[in-house]
Image (tube, rainbow, N blue to C red; front, side):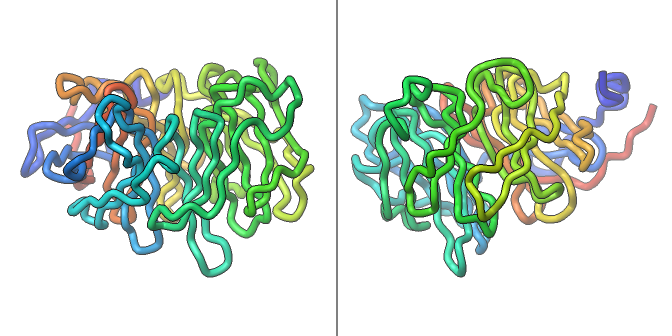
Length: 331
């Protein structure tokens, strides 16, 4: 058990300037700011799924609209301070099915968004939600790759390839080119041993170690893999780690050069990890905001200013958390 829980008596929860809802420990104490990240008029969110932050610090969310509502949006962009909010790419082509994971990618001098949709659908779009290509169904008719319910992309910088996690389906990682062509390379499959997955929910590039990291949710762990930006055939298991306080991790996000990671966990908390992946702060989102429906953190990410945004799955809720100065802890 981590020193964080062993020292639970030292947890610092204090009142910020504008909210009664504050959580976290040490250098990572956050205050909930309810007036930020308001969903635009006309949206009806069933599930909140994935975040992205672009080079101008704008904040993006992909969400699954309530199918009974008539909402044909699934992608929203806010200003860096969490104000505004506009629906992008509105229409059935992007919002049909179940929009899920969202990942930003820089390719050359341009930025793009990769969308994984549980309904056997992949999209690549501009930052304004214009669809550049779409792919439907499993990459091949190989029976190992069925069912096909994609959950998230990994987009390592400088690579010809993107990595698709079929987390709700086959539990394989499929390698595509940035132009949407399947390379013939797939890795993993269901299991508990190293390199196998039980809900490979997300895949991301960890800039701290230069490896791809898979959030292996129902195995309660993360797994690291070595890869090659010029070859689709390399995806080699490197190591794994587990954080006991994060039982069903959903994604792993990274700050802007300070060496910390953020992990939302579906059973309720969001954890902050140091560069050794040791837990240094735990924000009990479901405990603090559960009465407002924020029950199952599905994605959370740092903002460049140090603040945090959280998306919860069912019911879909989003929240903005302002980072406060380091708490003074007294025994």
